[in-house]
Image: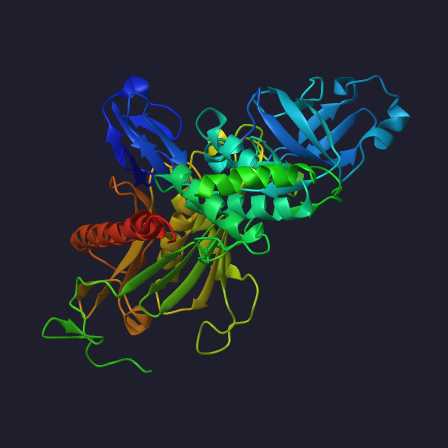
Length: 269
Length: 243
């Protein structure tokens, strides 16, 4: 394994030029600055195992409105700094007095970090087709430093989750995951996400999640007369994700289920 | 207990330690779920819990600095931590300990990474047995690492003192109460001193040897701190999956 756990102050390398996030340079040597997993291949960096989300320009985040002022929405983005969403960044022209009608305190949006200045004023925008208000599904919170693992290499983990849980999954860079689907599927997706979070630092994650999804599905979608081959209790660990339950509509994706179920059963043989 | 007649007999102290031996130490990382980082430490009879929150928004607002994060350190002794009930709440002593401990940790934290924010460190002493500020710093520095806060390195602390005209490492309660000197020291693994206080009298030669003893003690504590942090994740790494 090319990754190892390091603590702040651990010596990493002499290769100062390739020192990257999570490291610092002193006397021509590279040291770890955070407690996390170090990778030394061409790019020397340490990925922290915990920590808050620090906004970067271009990130897509799930923000929750905490305040409405006369021309700005102030949003919580799970970081030490609030996000500011100016009225002009709303997709359509609205009146200052109507701001709360379109987006009120407690509602969540998918937003793009438009800019972050040196004193960490964070500007958000909704001017993109992918962005907008979140009206259904659930939001699950995970440690922001684990977001890359949730996404996987070029989105492989998300695809895996989507295909197997029948939910739509969106991972915000700030560690909020938005899932939509029917209630049962979302419960399942939540379990899988908790497992990914708990085991993200162990190698071979994708394989383990794949087998976990298959096994769990044997139990969840059991049809009368069908005996799953493997019927082990699988420990998922504590569910740390805090759940904000917005009323989910049940009618979605119900018809598709049987089709997908066939596919899954086929997988297991 | 009243003053013992002799603290050291044949190079062995009252609690059976050699003069340059630390008390047994046990670290536990990540014991609090709500904190961003936490650590429980037993150091001899001391039992302390450290919790780290942040970086987060500063309240009250006027305390915030526009270019760096601020560090707040709150040291508190539980009313049941000592034999005679301690009156709860901050007092002259705990305010001082908070200040020097904060200054012991501040130099290793990259505060400039988080402007306009605060890193809150809380240290609760559940049971006190001499050297609580050193124990607090040891626990707090592990908790800071656990919180994912960028730092130059950890900080380790221990005390050196003088009893029966002899230098001893890591004073226990009686040695602290009736001894001739008490010198708490905090150092980084690189040997930079971030805390140095002295209570009592030492000759300059004694002071120099004492400091070296303390540094050696701190180096041992650093190993334990490192091992504790490694242990938090290594269990899972070895075991692999849950099957």
